[in-house]
Length: 341
Image 1 (cartoon, rainbow, N blue to C red):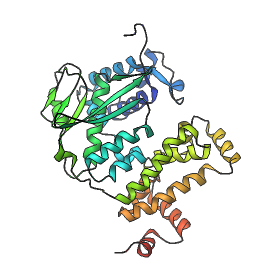
Image 2: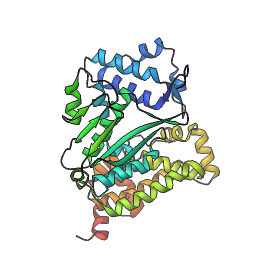
Image 3: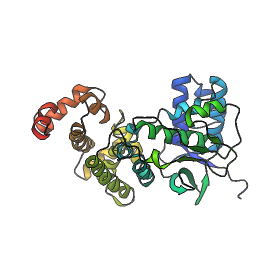
Image 4: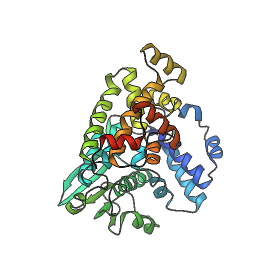
């Protein structure tokens, strides 16, 4: 065990929690930040870290401030497949729960390289757990992180199936809290504390549940995109990296130049300049991704307002104009020409 080493956490996680608490609970972010001399500017740098203790302190203060012991579970409910880009679409279009979890584990690096999900068979059950990669070692998640991530994983699974399920067993490493009922609303009755790991356990029947959006064709399309994106961070050109970031951000309303530039780790002007040197522009690349995905969603049966939202349009009308520019016809006409009834 290392002594005297301050544990670090991704600044992005801290900012996500802080934004949620400020927006939904009116939490005084400025007071918290100033009391600890935290530089918000430094936190927005790609790959930035923050003292992990600050995240715990933030959550503890927020629970007291809100008078709500289920704050963390409500935070996890803000996560849904459509906000996870390609990874979310892989889960949505998987054939059943088991396949969705397998895709989650395989392609989790698309949304973060700090956490590593594991899915294994154990004692006639199937275990889904998360470990954190820190300083070259794999470690268990601490209390609040475990609560957030396990509830978020379960929430994602329940978002892609028609009937809500509870794990047949859930285990946590931390001691039993006073507010057990808040846990039971999320994980069901069978929850164990003071265990060796944080994990969700499912049975074969639950894993065999068909998803609501099962689509083998779309699954194969997004799996190819995911495989390509996983390689981009290592050896892709800037154009490929930007395409990957746009794909990952698809489904969010902020697929902006600024947002993607932040993901790539450049100033927006610098990104535009370097893309120009490669003979492309951000607008062109964004259009390529949107054009490719638009027809996939039409064939899936989604409405045009939903597709517009998935592709990052704030409203339906700009999407309709863009679609007609791409294909020369409206989405309805395109469907009639390309999809057999």
